[in-house]
Every structure is written in C-alpha cells, then in structure tokens.
Length: 109
Image (cartoon, rainbow, N blue to C red; front, side, top):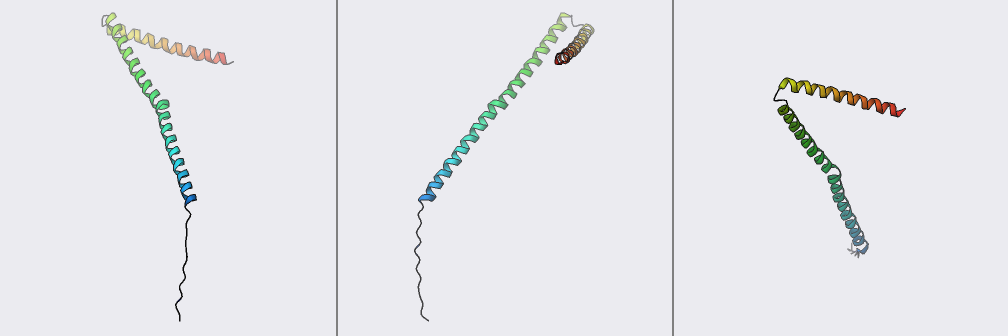
C-alpha cells in the first residue's frame, strides 16, 4: 500500500478577535470604574452620616453630663433635690410627648 500525505493549510484572521478583546477590556474597565464610584457613593452617603450621628450623640451625651453637673452644683450637691427635680423633668417630658402624639392624631382628622 502506498502512503499518501494530506496537507491542510489553516489560516487565522484574528482581526475580529482582537477587536472583540479590546471591546471586552474596555467594558471591564468601565465596570471597575463604576464599582469605584459606587464605593465612593456608599462611603459618602452612608458611612459619613453614621459617623456624624455618632459624633452628635457623643456631644449630646457630654452636654447632658455637663448640664447635670451644673445643676448638682447649683443645688449644692443636694442629691434628694436633684432626684426630685429630675423626676419632675421626666414626667414633664412624658406629658409633652403624649401631648405631641395627641396633637398629631387630631391633625390627621
């Protein structure tokens, strides 16, 4: 038997492949930039307000402590008078809250 040889010429035009590859690289870069932008937006829109709220809470607590200290000093460190006054203020606060809820309900009708 005689041996026969078959030759195949394979050519590749990679122009379209290169074009699609560049397009996909641009798309991935755009996606990455969008993710960076989202991260910045979340940081400024969520994290910063939480930090600001925390700072405001600490300041409010500090102001409250200072006010109570001044009140105690004004009362001559009389613990009983301080407690009586504090309880009256708590009662006033509850009444004020109840009054606000009542006014809100009345305004809805």
